[in-house]
Amino acid sequence: MSEERGCSGSAVVLGFILGGVVGAGLAMLFAPESGRRTRERLRDLAADMRDKTIDLSEDLRDKA
Image (cartoon, rainbow, N blue to C red; front, side, top):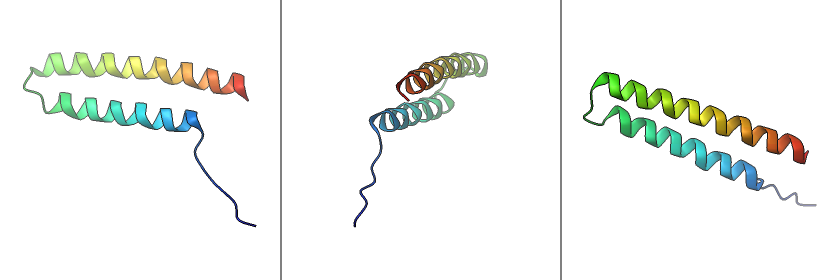
């Protein structure tokens, strides 16, 4: 009567993506660049992450 719980493969991938984004964001915040350039890079990173999240959610919706 033991239940086995685990993460699906897509949840693991999403976790790695989110961890990578957080790490990249922190690296940019502490990088010795100008504020304007850092904001541009963060904006680009956020847009890229948004697009990847939308793609992943559509893929998951199609599989369900």
